[in-house]
Figure 1 (cartoon, rainbow, N blue to C red):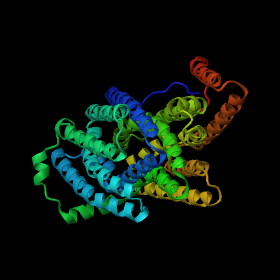
Figure 2 (cartoon, rainbow, N blue to C red):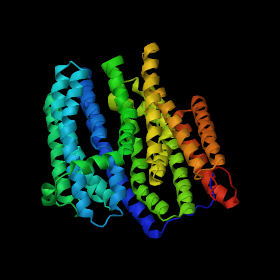
Figure 3 (tube, rainbow, N blue to C red):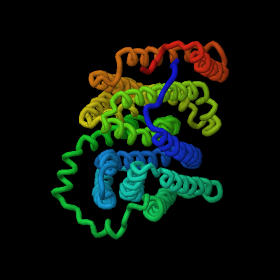
Figure 4 (tube, one colour):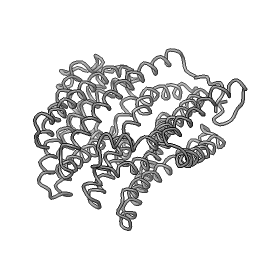
Amino acid sequence: MFTKIELPISSISRNLIVKNSFWGIFAQVSQSILLSIFFVITAKKYSTYDFSNYIIVTVMCQLIIAFSQLGLGHWFIREISTTIDKEDLMSKFFKIQLVLGVVFYFVNIIIIYALYDNREIHILAIIFGLNIIFDNMINAIKGLNIAMFDQKRTFIILTIESILKFIIACLLFIYPFSILILTIAMIIVRFISLNLFLTFGSSNILNIRKIYKYKININDLKILIFANWPFIIVGASSVLNWRISTIIISKFLSPIDIANYEISYKLFAIAQILPIIVSSSIFPILIKLFNQGEINNFKSFYRTVQIGYFLFGLLSYSFVYSFANYILHIAFGQMYINATIYSQQMFLTMLLFPTVFLQANMLIAMKLEKLDMWINVITLLINVIFCILGLHYVKSLTVINFAIFISFLVFHILQDVSLFRKKISELKNIIEFYGLSLLTVIFYIFSSKLINPLLCFFLYWLIILGYFIIIPKKNKTMFFTLK
């Protein structure tokens, strides 16, 4: 499948990627296990009505957070890697995020009251919305740690947070409490995390006293926002593409559909861990290679990572296609039995998501954030249009899942065209990516109907593993040949 691969980066950079990614993957896996158990317990302990209301509030909060940061995270990571006075830039960024968090907290409440007349949703939104303020400050520190290759601090604190949430969920077995009490408990846990970030998690650059004294110049803020407004759209669109579906479902379908979608998305979110964490370590390397004019190394590095991402997407899809039924039955029993088929549908998008994420970082590293922004906007519009039109005729989650898949397919194609025009990608490799994706998925689905799905999974990946072992010895070149 691919021959000899040479990473075009120094051993120091490789060590940084491995170290950063190891801590990220280790922490995120442990967090996801704990938070998934939290999700399962709350889904089973609360009624579908209460659980769906809680989901609506948390999703709306996530959507507002995507806007509240004004997409300045990528800008900050790019700037702090080259600026001399890192403490001053950090103080400026943190203070801006704090102020924006407060502003968008009230925006969240206004939107919730405008969309829903449910009193429980209103109360939960007022309380849970405090996360917008906390998250803005936490994400500022997380961005600093990414830029300084010091994500170990971030992952340790987030692991502590997930443990606390897990403990709270376990208390439901001992003493059941209302969804309101659960929401208050989640806010307290997030506040504890914020204080841990401020005290221990800021790479020794964050100066609280300096932040307190720092005065935000309104004109400078306007210039900053207008200069980096594409990041706002990019950052918001990436979240909107997924989370707006929950809001659409809440207006068109039933509470059980909200729960089924969130269960499917929870599986998808777990699968996102590896490409997102690895990408957060790779992004600064891409910036460095491009800024230093090492275009050949930039292209080769991209191709190397793309191969790994392609295989991971295929692994994720095949795993969920074969095992989702068993996993969800154990977790939820018969309560959300239809979540299996919806999870299988949603994971078609995982064939594209890792490389979409990589190529988005490529465009931003090349300072083509405006192009990336418009691609995000087009993708979001396609998703929303297909969702609303589809649900007008067919009241099913299948419409949502395929709308997301189609929008990501368009996303990927537009990225491919852009990178091809910039002579980063080759037409041969682009065609091979789609061709092999289509053939392998069709082959896997067909094979799963002929033999036991579990056996099919192991045989499928045994063949792929054997291919990797045999091909280099025969010195063959086929798919994804690196030059």
